[in-house]
Length: 188
Image 1 (cartoon, rainbow, N blue to C red):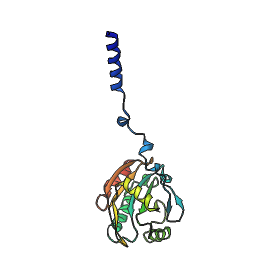
Image 2: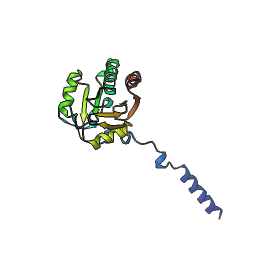
Image 3: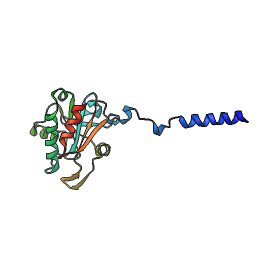
Image 4: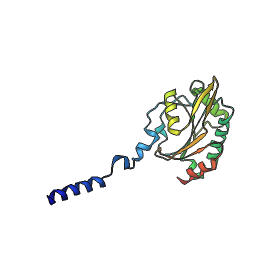
């Protein structure tokens, strides 16, 4: 009987010490935005995937080109962020602007906008996709948006920073705290 109690006690102890799946730290790949398999188009009309940014720090904001209120401020913040980076980080950082208005923001419109904003070369990337892909990424980034008229959206002003593996390392409200993003990127 004592042997049976000892055996049961040992099994209970080992069972309690075993790490359960919900207590395990997820691997980096499962936390990466690069696991999204959505198809995107860049401002040059080329097919793109988010994983093309793997290996670089990536700074992301969601905007739409016809916006006349918050988006110009977000774009100015993105420029300030890039200009504030240490020179060693500039070459290893991608600056990505994703449109929430795929009906208007075609690759041609994005290209014209990029040229007008002097953002038509590396490290600047403008992306568009279908509504489902955009909404999925917006949910991951905690960006809320809603079309409130045929040409206007209400949306969050969030800037997100991803490390070279696509894991989010920083996120701030744009138009206010671009210095925090600069610090986050320079720390990587």
